Image 1: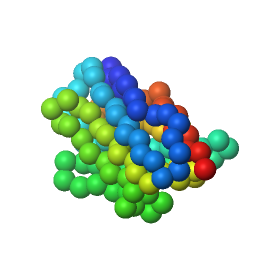
Image 2: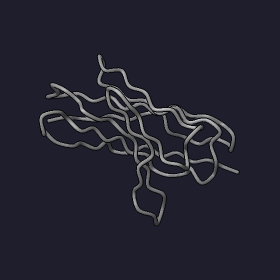
Image 3: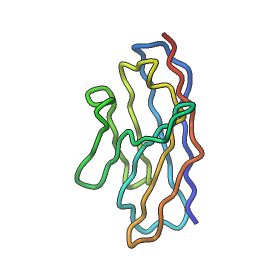
Image 4: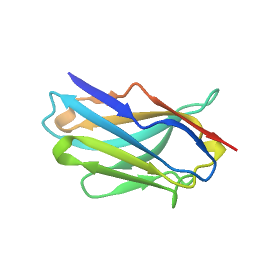
Length: 116
């Protein structure tokens, strides 16, 4: 079993910054991919950013403002969010895909609210 614990959400004014963290623990031998999704009220969950050992991906809406990074030794992924906009307001969820087809896991979500 794998547990994901997220932190770093909160309330910030437009133009501000937040840093989200997600630490994975439990039966982990290897992690293929770590990522962040978000879900605004009334909307579907959408991919924000993903990172593997060799590459990263960003949704067009966050390119140039958000940066994803990971600490492999600590099985932790981060999302640095700068120049935040009100439309970034959502619950942010961490996702981890283990190696060898051992499954995909989700965090409990952390709320990010950006005021105008």
